[in-house]
Image (tube, rainbow, N blue to C red; front, top):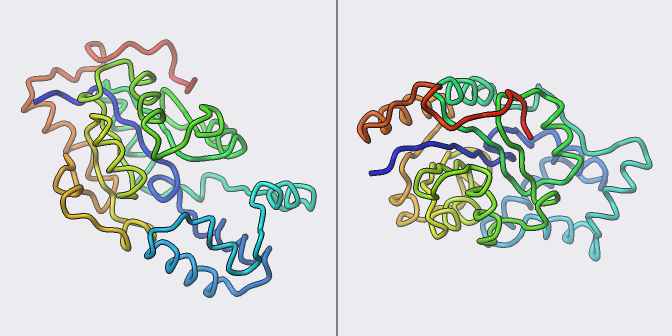
Length: 237
């Protein structure tokens, strides 16, 4: 059993509650928020890309183009500290205090990455699909996580809410996984075999630090900060 030396967390619905932003998209499209949420759920249940949701309301919808239009209209995609799940920052702080390398890695835009960096989160690395030029579930995305972690894949724990985009591809890339059941994907998409393959199954990030500590204790890993991976600074790269 390998010790956990690095923990990377997904962003949307793992540390960030996306309810407000999906609501803003419903407003932009001129449809009731409840209707937008219901269609999003149906798209997820059919195993389709969430971006297909927009096509039901506006066939031919160009998400990138509409993002630019929102910026021009003074309504850009935006969120702040209050969009973080309450357990997110304390979890990252606790993991980092254990001497683990902590990072964020998700399918996000460069604008979302700028927001994440502006929040002063207790992480060592922030990675997004826009910046890396590769998105989940591509194996290349998880290879980049391992590179950022600075240790072997079996010592990297990836935490996410999606069985299809997070857990499955991370396991196939050799990473350990933690599945957090929240957000629409966490409740709708299920796969018993992949869930059984998770090191941890969570209902809240508050559970994670103690689970990681116990795992590392059983693995004989001294998690004092001075024996963890070196960090050049306390701010994300």
